Length: 256
Ligand SMILES: Nc1ncnc2c1ncn2[C@@H]1O[C@H](COP(=O)(O)OP(=O)(O)O)[C@@H](O)[C@H]1O
Ligand SMILES: CC(C)(COP(=O)(O)O)[C@@H](O)C(=O)NCCC(=O)O
Ligand SMILES: [K+]
Image (cartoon, rainbow, N blue to C red; front, side):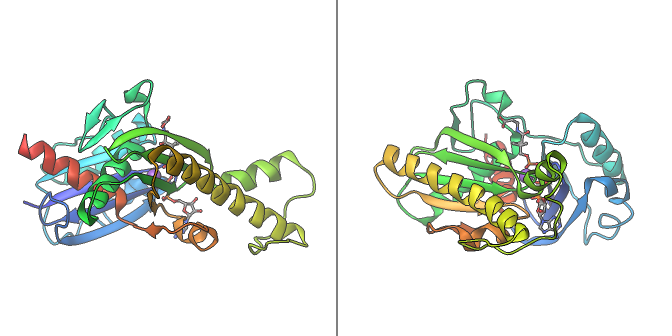
C-alpha cells in the first residue's frame, strides 16, 4: 500500500514514502533534490527504497517541463503520476481565490495540511499558514476552513539577489539579524528577515481581527528555521505540512 508524496517547489523537490496514504502513516523514506539534480532522482534516492510506491500524489509549482522530467524518473516503477490541481473545495478547505485554479498547488495543499492539524488539536479555529521557500506565502484560513486570501512576497534569497543586482555597493557576506544593524551585512540580513516576519505579523493581525480570536500559526518550508526565531507571535514549525496535506487529500479521495 506504500504511497509516494512529492512536493516540487522553485528550488527543490522534496519527496516522502509512506506505508499507507493516510495522515499519520509511517514514514518509510524521504529526501530532497535541487531542481538541477532531478535527473539523478532514480539512480540516487529512488533506487533503493524499502519498497516501490503503489500510488503517488504530487504538487508542483515549478512548471510542466520540470513535471515531465520528474515523471521520467518515476518510470522506474509501475505508478501513475497524479498531480494536485487547486480547486474550489478539497480536503476540508474551501478555496476563496478569485480563480481557485490559479492558487499555487503548494499553497492549497499546505492549507489542507494545516486544516487537518487544526481539527486534530481541538475546537475549530482560524489558522495562518506560512511557507518560507523560494518565495514566502502567508495564507489565512477562517475557523470554517475557508481560505480568505494570502500574501506572496520574495524569499530572502530573491530579496538579496534583487538588491545585489540593482545596486553597486550591496555585495556583502551574510550578516546577523539585529534590532539596530550597524553594518551592511547585518542591515541586509535584518531587512530581509524583518520584511518577512513583519508581513507575517501583519497578516496575523488581519486574521485575528476577522476571526475574533487568536489564530493558530503554522510555518513550513526549507528556510522556516531561519525566520522562526525572529517571529514574535506564537507559532509552530511543521516541516511535513505539505506532505500532511497530500496525505489528507489522498485519504479523502479514497473515501469518496
Ligand atoms: N539545506 C538546504 N537546502 C536548500 N535550501 C535550504 C536549505 N536550508 C535552507 N534552505 C533555504 O530554503 C529555501 C528553499 O526552501 P524550499 O522549501 O525547498 O523551497 P521551494 O519549495 O520553493 O523549492 C532556499 O531558498 C534556502 O534559502
Ligand atoms: C507563490 C509560489 C511561487 C510559491 O512557490 P515556492 O516558494 O514554494 O517555490 C507558488 O505557490 C506559485 O507559483 N503560485 C501561483 C500563484 C498564486 O498562488 O497566486
Ligand atoms: K514550496
